[in-house]
Amino acid sequence: MKRAAIIVALLANLMPVLSVHSETPGLQLNPLQYEDNLTTNSVHLGYVDVSNPSDAIITIESKVQGFKQTDIAGHLGFFDDPEITGGIKVDLARFDLGPHEAIRVAFSVDPQKLPKGGVYAVIFFRTIPPQQSSASSFVAESANIGTLLMLQNGGSGAHVGKITKVDLPFLQFGRGLLGTFDYKNIDRSITAVGFKPAVSVRVLPWGSSPKLASALVLPSSERRFEVDRRGSFFGILPVTLTDTDSHQHVTTWVFALTGWYQLVLIIIVLTLGALAGASYLRKRQPLSQPDAALVTEPKSKAKPKTKAKPEPKTKAKPKSSTKSKSSTASSTARPKAKPKPKRRPKPKSTPE
Image 1 (cartoon, rainbow, N blue to C red):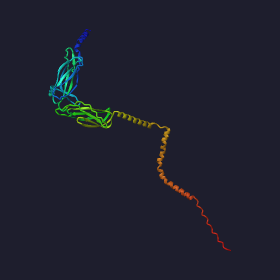
Image 2: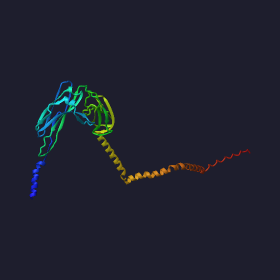
Image 3: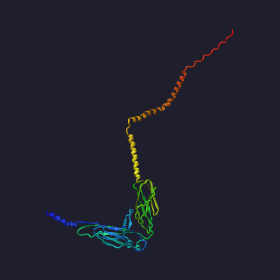
Image 4: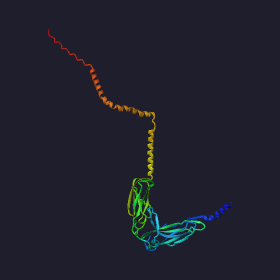
């Protein structure tokens, strides 16, 4: 008993040392995207609102990096660039925020220190984990969130791109026409800029041409977007995608049965199935005795007819001969008419 009590006492003393604490700090930024056209050489000012929604005090560091598109899905990669960090400055490099506090962080953009054309940067705000306590094992997490800066530093800002691929399955069912298309920003000039493609879709003979949803495509990058044309369509139809900037047209053909046309097809199939089932059951149903007699009588009469057809042709001649013989026999059987007696001439009288 004494040994058990000693073990319990030791475990109770070790519990504070073995306890594990975990905190998940959070950050909220506004705005998440910042766009500006740097038409003049003067310094442009902007701001980002940073708030702490947690119940603890957090320490935040800011950092400026460039970003680029890494794949066709639109994922971004971040990198350090001295030109970008030299032209974009954040007022607060490190600061603290209390529970549920917010602060407005200003930044400046100097066009003369940035490269010409499109400039794509991000201002990151990262929470610094607190120092670990020697009496506890501390599992800390760091939040890293940023505001994207999409700047146009001079240049014409022309949108130069093209549709490289359209993938629409030939058979289309459901709520509408679904598929994907790939779009590439082919501008390779020094002043190239990223932009959102303006692509519309049209299904003939329907006349409307709604625009499809898109996102930023950086210079020399390609990105994939969805084709989602809601509506009721039926038949083999041409689907045309049009780039409103370059006036490029790409047409593909599909067989569509979407919307309420599917309900019409279901009704037709059910009706035809009911008619086919009714006719099948009618054929399988046993006949009553009067009906059976009506059905079998023509069959019994039909057999001699089919066999007797050649007989009249072969026996027609002898019948005619017998008729002629009987007619001749009847004619010969008639008694001949008696010849009229000749009148005897009267004797001439002589005179006495």
